[in-house]
Image 1 (cartoon, rainbow, N blue to C red):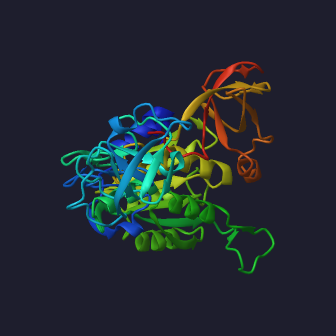
Image 2: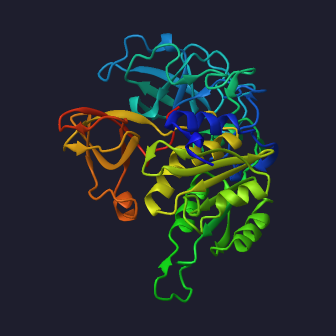
Length: 412
């Protein structure tokens, strides 16, 4: 495999997403549906509210009865009843000169065209004084004001937020049909790695990548399964990959360069995984292998901690969301004013760890310091990535640059 399998940043994204086939569906309780992706449009079979009701605690009245009402010259109406939320308005009727006490959400009685709130009234001895003129329709919610029967309320492919869950409940959904979550096997490779809590020897380092990626997979609402560390032998790497094949997606970190003990690409070949590319014109993260076998996706991420994370954000995360049927896949990109000079000695797209602030409704951005691929701490302090196109030698303070907001979800 040579440099013929190197691809551009944009082509890598397109190739990956073109390889994704969304998973099937399942019904789940709406209490478990937050951040899951709808499998089908939600079309309302009812009206919300189901009947005309009151938007305020007050009095159901005929608006014309309040003409000329002021604090010093109130209009007096006879109170002929009360309707509480949850009660029926059957048999209750407002006529000229009368009012019915009503609570928020209670059904509107016959002949009523408005509601005056308690704060603008004073009730004594079976009569209510009204201190303001009320317009027809005031504090009055007609049936179907929020949702009408036949409305398409939520679209297939939408990731459900808390308001969506409330809408589903209001439409009498206890279960909702959503896309299944992909199972994501996570493999670390390298004799030098030791998991947290394990004994560590001279020359060993703690395995950070598996836990970074595990967390990112969970943030996507996919199901991570950590497979452990494969030692730098062909046999060990193959064995752990065979166990991982039950997953929908396999992510490995390390072992994708040209080192003597980098076996991941050899394993792809041995297992019949079709390699689509093995390098991307991006910095950090040029060594990046993507392959597929049937509907299964395989991502070989770099071994250094920062490119592992940035590669996941750019390439793996959109693929996982697409597997779950989501339509919005990319984190938002906005323009920001650069607050420092940035040198670029690469002809690839350079993703500089940055921190943006907002001043006078404008975005400003600076780097988070050292940009070596092993400096995960600089990623911890970042809330964006400054996108530096290839072949740009230097960006100067004051220039506008595109930044990707990595702490934000997609913008719909």
